[in-house]
Image (cartoon, rainbow, N blue to C red; front, side, top):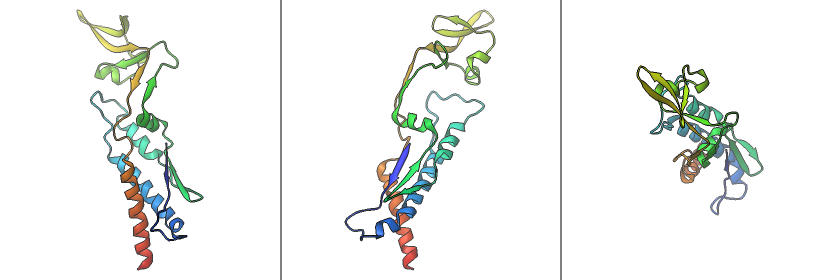
Length: 175
């Protein structure tokens, strides 16, 4: 995931744009980290587990300091799953015959291979509980995930963060 920042416009005097590029980029970097620190990634199908909150931390920690490249600053997020949340896509199994989708809190807490007593019932992996059978995992060949609303802030909010940081730097310099 890459965010680019440029400082330009008809009202910006020649040579001044790049003077404030680093400040604008740093403002965007801070804004993105703050935005994702406060972002709620838990959707309607969220089930708690031991590493709860790890995804959110990885997104925040994935933001790298801006790198100036000519008249552009580049801010990268190195956590690959953020791009997946932004664009969506199809998930398929890499080393198994099917994806296992947890259906219960105990199933969410561990991989199917770590769950004792599982057996296949149709398109599910189930366990026997007394006289009944309870599905723990659904089995499927693929899952289509839609883009996650708000996974990135609106462009206008990013631009505002850049503008505010550049204006603050200019006002500090003038005082």
